[in-house]
Length: 76
Image (cartoon, rainbow, N blue to C red; front, side, top):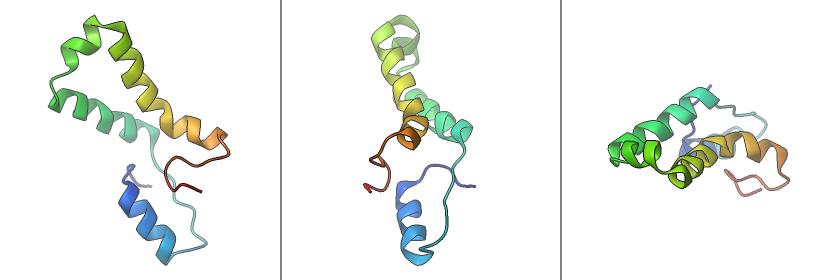
């Protein structure tokens, strides 16, 4: 399993055409949260509902893409 690193996914897809690359939703959301902290957005997250909703939406992209016909990661 891999964290959500788009460049790595694309490189693996080119080298291992038949491989199925899977990621961990927990680690993806954790990486997003760490970026929120790095950018100093924790206060905005807790105080502004729109910011919280947007960040949660970003955290859900990895789940939503599986249900869409267009892949958000590899542009298929």
